[in-house]
Length: 222
Image (tube, rainbow, N blue to C red; front, side):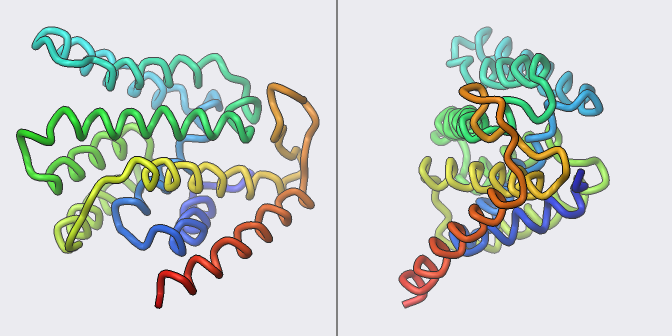
């Protein structure tokens, strides 16, 4: 099984042509990192996700604010906890669901604070929360330093839900693409089918990525 040392750079490579923005690239890192939360070795991080979601939901409820962003984390933690490794959460529908949950969380977090603090502060806080929940502890400190510097040096930052979803989705997709090249393969169509897909499917995804990325780079570089 590829380690985070392979998944992280591969996610950046797949996301960079579409999202040359430090914040959106970080979302791709979260996407590729969170996929393996359906593995028992990630149980501590699932618990952290659940507890952070619970604390957020309670605080927001007490102050009569929308508690959905906390509930989203709780639901996501429960889904990962009951999921079988390389089952539904490693499928196309699964990564779409993960991306949607995370997009709702990010958008809700933004809407909660947009009238209170500057956008860059919101993005930093969001990056800290998601980084603490999702990333490998060896990556967390250097990630946070680079992310904070990158956000504050990036001009004209904005938040677009389609870009957020796309960045999360490509990060998740990069993870299962690498997993397709392993001997155990991936059930891409779960829960509709338990059939395992392997290297040829990984190659097909890479071909589709190239076909999409090259015109995208050409169009937006001119």
